[in-house]
Image (cartoon, rainbow, N blue to C red; front, side, top):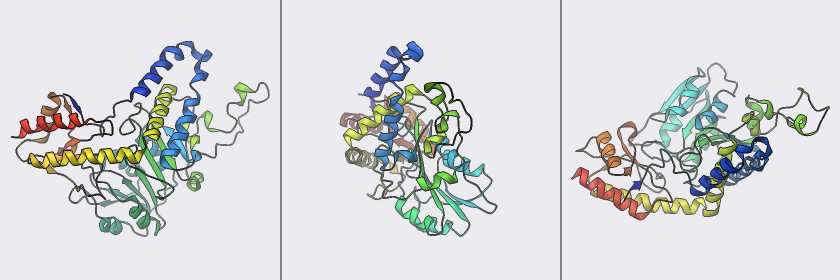
Length: 366
């Protein structure tokens, strides 16, 4: 049996989304403007479902193309001052380092220890000049999950903002922005949300929106569409920017992607992220037990306060890239970032897939 354990790399597009997007391709898009109005509501639906998932207001959500785009809305949108510092994390994914590095601010690094990060190191990195802490909820390679509430408490006591790359957690781990006071969040939908490639979610807390210089395409202004729907007298340029995060969405967007995104978010809502997390916790525990039995070393803590859907591991006798390629050749789909073999099951992963992976692994490390 094949095993798909690469949701940290690319989620498998859910069947409901495939069907909805296929219907749009066949029944809507070939007819141009005559039928496209049928799928325009998908973006509004996706926005509402994203706000529900994150427990925030729809005004605080923009639908973007990927994590990097969302993070750049913050990095490029804030008014940086000379001497500003941004706290970043060693061995974090480049998408959460480059945007800040490109602004010319001073980067202060939190070291990685034992595959994760110590809050004492985070506290030591934060100082009077800290303007923002740029943190990933889950490390892309080791799977270590940081305590976002603790990070926010450390940052906010010096007036610093917290921006979160949530691409490796959103859709698999519960996160309520009504409870956890992060300031900004970005996550592509193509991993744990199992959505279309090229779609994603950006969050900005409402009170920060006036501080961001968000890009404004023609549709990012109040009443922008009136000239197309209300007749003569509504063609004008002196329009006010939208007061919501949607101002960043610009002009024409990926209507097909929104159809798929709305469907995967609806399915997640129906299943419930807490139920998804429970299932993934069970599967990752099975995988960890099997990996240890096979002599593998797991890269980060799997304790209740640090586990995620990602397990990074090595084996002392088999080089990681060769091991990962051997597993893929055996139809066990894993990846090998940063010198580790990475496995990442989802709620949809079957027990038999875990069995198949562990059997293939045992054959290659014995």
